Amino acid sequence: MSSTPNTYEYDRADAPADALRLHLNEHTGGCSPAVTTAIAAVTRETIAKYPDYTRVTQAVADHLAVPSSRVLLTNGLDEGIFAVAMAQLRQAGVGSRESGVAEGRQPAADSPTEAVILEPAFGMYADAVEAVGGTVVRVMPGPDLALDRAAIAAAVTPRTGALFVASPGNPSGVSLTMEEIAWLASLLPAGAVLLLDEAYVEFGGESVIPHLDTYPNVVIGRTFAKAYGLAGMRVGALVAREDVIGRLRRMLPPYSLNVFVVAALEAALADQAYMDGYRAEVAESKRLLYEACDRWGLTYVRSDANFVLVRAGDRRQALLEGLEARHIYIRDRDRQPGCQGCVRVTTGIVAHTRACIEAMEEILCAKA
Ligand SMILES: Cc1ncc(COP(=O)(O)O)c(C=O)c1O
Image (cartoon, rainbow, N blue to C red; front, side):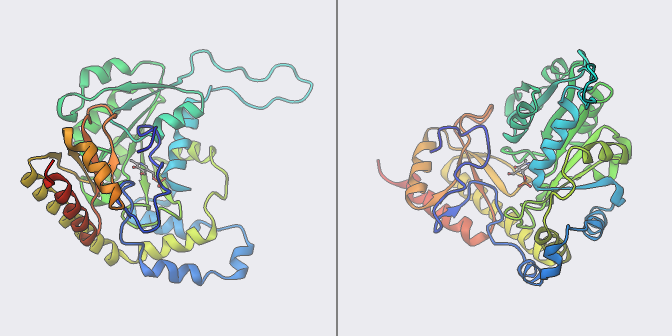
């Protein structure tokens, strides 16, 4: 397996074409057919122009039931994570100066440069923080991946510019409660933001978006990669109060999404029935995998996402190798905090999950 399994999520995106990719939490059924139809209908004239995001932003805003002024579309949620890191952790005060004028604005010595990351976390948070010159402050999980409130409270200081956490979490699949989210938001110093990453919320858990007015320091991250199957298109969104969105917008290029993405996203959002069908497949896939794990005596974490973290223990290596030999890719999460002995399995289309379970059964039940 990869030599850097715990940093960035996307190694092994190069799995063979015929492989069953259950290691990146992708949509295993492909996007709605309406998406490819919409892409094919993009005209030469549209391609020749810079994109206009008014209509697609409104479509996303309607879908999320917020005003469009609270939505910033991004080139994948990854770009949104970078925007938050840049807005919150760059040395404040660095700006432009006129040629020949010696004094530019100097970085404020006390500007916040630390980001608190609740482990086990999506690897992009740390990568983005480090890329903008910020300092990562990792907080380890409590028993059973619970929040360690004392450790989190100790990690947040006046130097904290952002706190990154996903709900449902990756790799855990566990959602935070509203009370936990409110507590996290209340801990932060003035000016800091809580990036609440809801990449998987379509599959379970509760979105904080309806409560945005209660939490002015929360930025919600969404992606259309997972439930809508647009990972290859690269499209996500940040949702926050207008003043925060205004600040984040300045971190990004003005035309970050191309015209094909715009057409794809409009078509995907218009086909909610397709998404609902996929969500039902994911729910059934998780049920089948839980049932199989119970049979094999493996424990797992009940997931609100489109994947399951399975505690394979000393059978982990055999599973990873045996599945890879059968061209089925799952994800080794052994080295992430709180995930010793764990593998993460994407649970998408039921037929794919059945194929994976069958292969796992062969491996786990093989005579030594
Ligand atoms: C928790 C989490 N956030 C964000 C992303 C990135 O989303 P996107 O593909 O839209 O950049 C992922 C992708 O795996 C993820 O797991």
